[in-house]
Length: 445
Ligand SMILES: [Mg+2]
Picture (cartoon, rainbow, N blue to C red):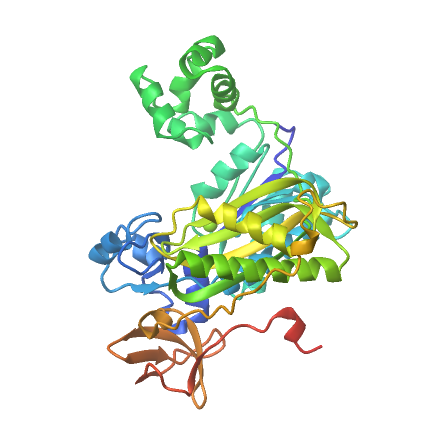
């Protein structure tokens, strides 16, 4: 715990749903549910309007539909989320070199390391100063994201800053003055402590411990006996707001990766292996072009229900051999259950070195791996996912409102337009295409 409240935690409110409402004006102020829309889909994010009907993250989409049938149920648009996240993280990094992202929509910022030439109000780190600064930062977030709100907590540790950002959500700010941390925690459930999940909660409940105040009555020895050494010590510390974890800036994660998203769920394992092989060859080509090699091969698999799995394996020495990368990628895939369908596949190599050591597997002769012609079959049934960005030759940009029985319905609007008109087309109308953002290389200038 620091002598002043100088750790800031920022959390964007209902992030995925908020991005959808920004880009789809007709959905502003309405219930929006982002997640898997299929039969076994799971809710990823619900807008606050949908939460009023009891819709929550991780709930089955089936249940969400029962609770809030009039909500807009959308699949995700990760390019839009990533782009928005990057703008927020860049803003935070302009404040302090010590920014620790926890996910796309959440990060810690160390205000003690802030650039005081740019932000003189942070020179004294007093409660009024950090409060004024945090309000300024929230306003800036709204500007750079095109209208998204963030909740912010500022406190003397990461633990308390994260607790604080949750207290007045959404669009809230809570600064916890030094010295008030324990009073704030005491009435809270023990589940407020990171790492206290259902199993630990149950063990604590059996000995009559429900709140942090209850937890304080146990000695460290008692907690260690109850929960084991590491957990017992950790809970004893955090129950007293003792948290000295530093804000660690994300190390520049050097990696080369290639990924593909598919308009329908892939289920064919052979096809998935072929796609991974092609991606591996692509990664290897990029590595060679840049004169790089890496030791860790990673695959990324996003399942039909939005779960994203990353699996990696590390070689003894760096490689840039397509056959090696491809073989490892396929081996990693073999351990995953993809029977429900896959909507994204990717291969990456990280832990980069700018030299190539002799390959561990001596597979240089296999370098030119024979590439099968891979064609992702087109299932028109799944091609138009609700929420997807599309473009019509005459009407311009819009999003898929719904599809079925050979018809796709589009609402023509973007973040920059008012709520727009709705039109229906045949699913195979040649004038209607999927819209994708320009990749950086394609951007003019
Ligand atoms: Mg959030």
